[in-house]
Image 1 (cartoon, rainbow, N blue to C red):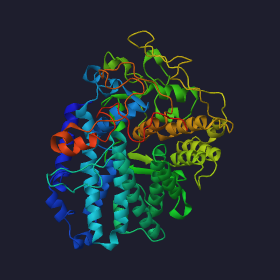
Image 2: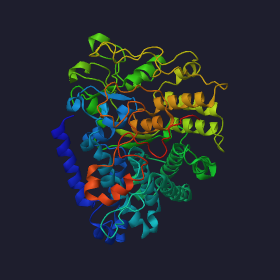
Image 3: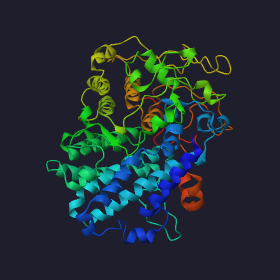
Image 4: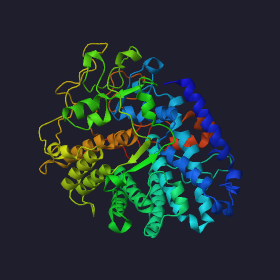
Length: 542
């Protein structure tokens, strides 16, 4: 982490955003008087500023700014999901990875998306109310807003959504309890889906072409498919706590009359960024060199002889593990950055941010089929198609058949030859943290085992989207990951089951105190990393 570089870039981005977009808890009069700072005529004559708002928002769903990405993604969900681990002992090993949660890092989860997603999408939606030609931009704004804010609620819980820019008499802005957030998210998606369904057979408008950073053709159809797949993802997220709502929303997402799901890799939702992918800088030895392969990736993909491993990671350069795909266990005692510097770096990613891929869609349908939802198809077919799509995404179609039929390979033990305490970081054969699940579908298996297969393969295919992988791990308990070795939370967060959420930022208690306290009171426990989100139930059985 290059702190000075990060701070300067982040402050500059906030200054620029501040010139364009008022903050979420201030400047209400300006926002409500002229929220887009554009007249309808200006919007009609040139789409540059309107498109810029939507481009800004798309690039902030998963932050493209490297410093923000490191704090909001890499040092939280990328590591908690098992995908990656830091080789640097940030703050003398007292950090998120050892459960001493750092508010100065984690507040960015909240701040960045309110400034860079909620504000610009709000502006576009307000402008669209007065301009019937902007129905497509309104739809895109809603989809982008849901995409980003679903990620915020899935880390923090209660968020400001339905009351956004609607202050109380005392100037505070109320939160929505998480159980109420999801109906609002679904409602926005439904409006967008209905709008895109009506536009699906019409030529893409000039303003949509300018605003869209994911698709160069079939814009309406592809965003419609993405919105439906996002709807299905969110439906399954709440299946344990709101089964009726989950089923209704999931079946609507899969209803062919609503436009379909992502099915082919040509429909993958990849946002073109304006800068290099942040993980390229965070992993590169000539840049920050702060992240490496996570130990669970080594154990699971290595045990499965998964050919995708070489598409995700670079063989280790450390003489002790030279040529191996070698990961670091997260939450361990690290002497210094150099210790693990030679372990497996990440491959270099193209200048695109992965929001959703077709493989995930098929794995979502596989779980929906297990649950008996209409239009879900057959679980086995969906599961195997998910593997096919993921292999195809990386040019590995020829290896898919053998991989799908492997009924013997299992995750392998993890051995850390550099552990400061001999064997302390190892995960040996027989450990409860080493799964015994195989790859080949088994119709005779229990639903719990079928779900473990589905989620494990989905986890592999989601890479590098640590936010979604961590959310699914908390929802299902799969794939089986390794607990931290060092826990510095002073008892606030149990090592098992580990961190469940990120706290409401201190800045919210300082600037929106009454609302933040009221939101914290809805958590069902203290505002700490140990309190489960609404949908994160302790009983993970199917």
